[in-house]
Length: 487
Image 1 (cartoon, rainbow, N blue to C red):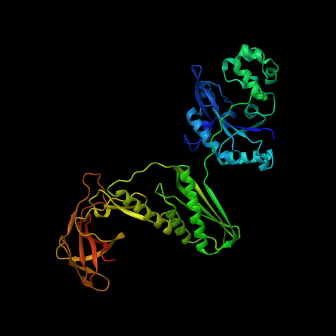
Image 2: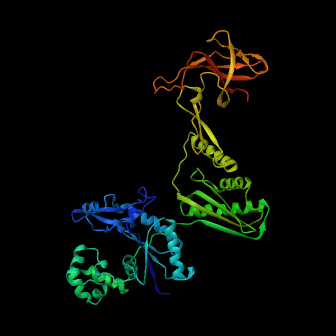
Image 3: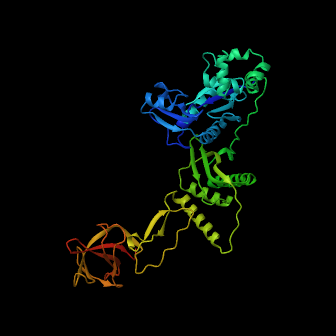
């Protein structure tokens, strides 16, 4: 099958970047600015700028006079090159040979794989769908050689292709214009030896590459490694033992392939296909960089126990969504790394069984106020710091909001003597001396933050409470219930 190349040209790629550099495409007229021959000119424009008459090569001062609301961005060739490599990986699903064509293009060899997509129209439709998913603007060109496809993408199939489109040096382009060589067909009729002698060998080589006489040496973007296993059962499986045994064997084989490649799994996706064709999927993101197969199988089993999977499973697919190089590791002698690994495994098992965001931990905060001395965060692979011993009794259970209560005391500043409820008056026993905690005077004052008196008391029924007293603005004491010690 003859070669067929497809060229993609992303005009003004720096104005289209969304996730690899800029803040996103501008809604109005925008242009890229670069320095050419000692002056600042436009090197790329978006569709809105082209509609208002701005073209590449126009001076920045003149562009500002024509379009006062023009948004200017400096060109960044290094970031554009990284963007092209990022985009190129998306097209490996269509063809194994994807070549980066700086500064704003890609080349795809589609001659040997077009029959897999129903011909030229099918593969062009697939390319257009990928470009739309990336939210990019691109022009497409087809040709028997990379150079021919590149010229078709930049100048279109209609009309003659300018001869200056084959050269990159502005001086050579001006020389061709001065000699009257305006079209590419006029240039192709000239002898190659004369062109190489008067205009340089590069132009003659590119003409040979355009006509296929000189094959171009193109380096393809390496295809990303994929680690995926698929098992199809002869009969739908309804029991969990067979499914778990199959998953365990697949995990062992997948981890062995990763070890041979020097990689470790960072995100794993499990997909089950039911007897009726419906799918069910779940993902694991182990916090440990080198999980063993038994541990991964345990996490998958806990995910399956949460429910939602098909009753009868016809096929299983296990894929490594994200992986990274395996780094050398040496354990310490104090045993801390073993404790940290045990903590990570415990959190992973709890998250797999209860949900990815259902496990939280408490960690201390450098604050002397009891209500703000501890905060809650989502559990991860980092163990929280140990809580320091409190200066006084602290309850195990805190109320979400302080509950106002009525307390009787001998004097306004004295300890509480009784708690008034709807039914009766309950005598209180003071379990520890009262604590006086003042607000943070060294910070910006907060009207809601006042000095409070905290104390632990016990009712006649044996219930231990954690209450506090706050002096209001008018000077009257107000009591609040903060938590319980026994429940």
